[in-house]
Image 1 (cartoon, rainbow, N blue to C red):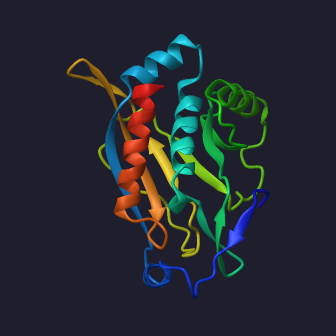
Image 2 (cartoon, rainbow, N blue to C red):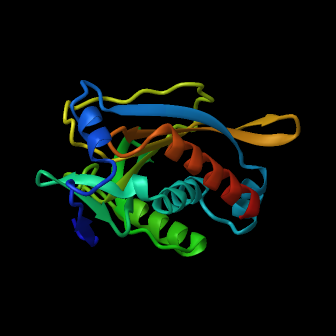
Length: 209
């Protein structure tokens, strides 16, 4: 873990009880899928000649970083809060039709991030460069399907609190461009309230980009 974090004092933390309850659940993570309007965002990305996939990674990770609940993790038996979370995303090798997992530091500039992410993804030869750090958001685009629900594999590690973000194939609806977006988060740290905050921030970013 390369990013800075602070250890949370569970004795004074107002979420300690909720965290404990959900941490002991058989399945402590929950997933929500919602519809987002990317009409303005898609236009901006196309106008700037950026990768749509990398721009989506940037958008969801930027908005998630702005919500404290998404930056909590379990680390060495303790609860920690990171100052910043970086990005990890799947990227398809079109020749082998196998994906690789790419890690890129989060840069709070759309164009700069997209250029670095695309360069890193294109140059990476390995499918996996090692276990992902605790300080990433995991993103998995699925541009072949306009889905209404998605689920994820479960390794059985209850203390894996890394949020997962997915999005599907965008489509036209009433003259607008829409896309399904999913977020899976650990309930010890993230509630429906925080999902709502994320949805609002993301839509605002798409509108104002």
